[in-house]
Image (cartoon, rainbow, N blue to C red; front, top):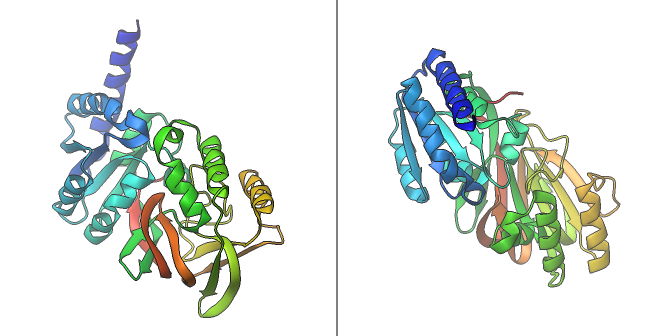
Length: 321
């Protein structure tokens, strides 16, 4: 019975894909086999079956090699459609090529974070519906951000973490913690990082005006309402308002830091006396020592001088909201 139901579902999904309007250019499906602890790889055969049954003229690149996926996207004609099967990290790695090529990006979210997919209304969508939507729905233009340090520059979609939350994100993405849900994974990683708590002196300016100077636990920059797999850091953040948002937590001891992180899990941190937040188009952060840094959940080289700016309507994506 189950085999018969699967066959029926594949046929229905194939019919939807085949009946949909064709994309204006080439179509590439990029599968990150490692995404979501291997969920991307497990989904690959079924994706290929649906596309083959539909007769869809889509090239599938399935790999654990990020460089190969980037090269495949970079080789596409301008304005092609790229379906990204993975999470925030997969999208992050492809972002420079997607923006440069002016490609339409569809998401089939199977990663461990999926905050970009959450902001686009795609998180939790059954994979066949997500595939149909990614292949056929019209795109919208959303903002991205660009983070520059003394080492490099990199565009991002969801977030940049500076300080404690970057260290937490790095720990949460490694080892056995990857297998846990987003909230428990973040909380356990936070407890482990608090054992080695380090506060840094930061000077933060937004749009040319000083926003904060002093010891700080973290400085987060958001383009999406959540980060870290659904943690509601800035619920007011929007993908298409031409601005980014920052949330800064002032330096404090372990007990107060833990209490603040617990408030974050319940989206009650923005009213806390130790928290500053603002929206901006450009932000500069200077520190007294190199700071842990992560972008879209991916670790970057620690940096002392960080500049972040919004790039309005720079990415064409398929969403549901």
